[in-house]
Image 1 (tube, rainbow, N blue to C red):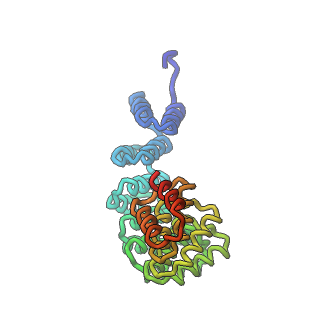
Image 2: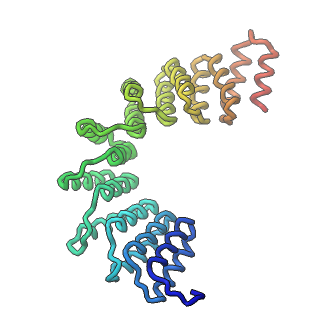
Length: 323
């Protein structure tokens, strides 16, 4: 500009994209406004890039402002990426009514943009996040005759929505359809299903799914182990809970304070104090801070139930707890 060189839309687009990648939305917007002042309307890519930037920053109002400018422009009409970005922004900002409104705009005769599988998957994720499983299922039924094949991400969103709304029967129907369509199940899928069955008190089915994960070489994560250990303890299957906790550590899944609190408390309650002490020492090694009452429970039981343990050992153990 200082050399009186002409700056074209390509240059403006590169500058806007660069500032957005650098998380400098204020500078990206300033360049956008300068572009307009210089008489450049800006194409669809530039406007959509700006919308995607606002989406990452969860600034829905600004994203919608750019969208409205696009609708009034002859050179920058919204495309599929524009709409999908806006839908994603609505979800991030918990503005689900606006998300639904944008989808209806896409389906109107005036709009030349056809929703794709990402559109439907995003909508379903949004409605499930809003705990509106009925609307999510309406969108799911709407995509079927359009020739789209639902993928694992879409099914997981539906299953998660059912879990959040405690709609067990609906979840079983969706899962059965997932199996019929031979859609792969991930750690996320199994985590949801295990939690659903555990919530209904069916620990055996949860453990069956856990075994299936192992057979299919799907690596269980912390959520799966925590859920199973909690469920086993609730149903007084302390030996299975201990087995799961040890298996978790063997598999390299790092235990957090929640699962440590759960397994140690369960061991103390079921008079497995040796195991409780073993896991408590493990928590020291892992540098995990437990709930204060866990330490109190262990010390109290050491004092009252293990008088055969040398005073020196009990004192050393107490010192480590209080450290």
